[in-house]
Image 1 (cartoon, rainbow, N blue to C red):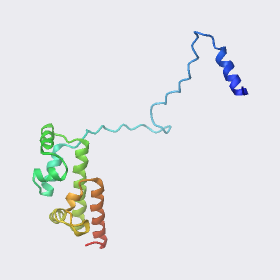
Image 2 (cartoon, rainbow, N blue to C red):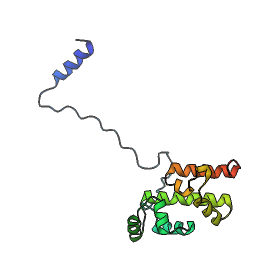
Image 3 (cartoon, rainbow, N blue to C red):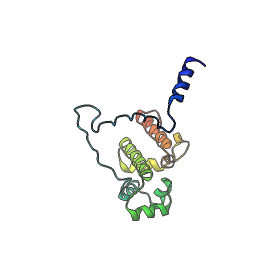
Image 4 (cartoon, helix red, strand yellow):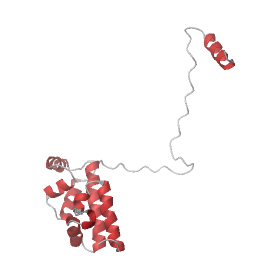
Amino acid sequence: MTGFAMKTATKAKSAKPGKKAPARPVPAKKPKGSPVKGLPVKKLPVAPPGLDFGEFEALRRQLDLSLDELTVRLGLSRATIDRRKTAGRLTKDESDKVVRFARLLGHAAHLVGSLDEARRWLKTPQKDLGGVVPLDRAQSEAGVREVENLLGQIARGVAS
């Protein structure tokens, strides 16, 4: 046996049968409060799990889409929207989709100068998106980035 193995074996044999091994030390609890000494801890209000259903309705009106059109473009079912309307609140994922479309509408309106022109652009097939309607491409975060990139190119005069 090597020296280390011999010492380990000796220690294991020296323990008395029926006697518990000493408890492992418990790490000290971290103190509550700011991680930086002297700075106060600011408690943030807890946000509800999703947007109020009224935000869905406001987006629908701003995009000038029917309830069914917006529901399909957001990748939701009519039954889901009916349940959310009754509950008065969207889930976090549904809220993310609403915010994604609202962000696109705001970006387009800023670029083209009016809400009407932004609506028209977002609902019209764009050759730089392979002939796809921007709102249809925006059903995923990656699709939103693609539409936003196109809007950025238009703003810089790179795309038509």
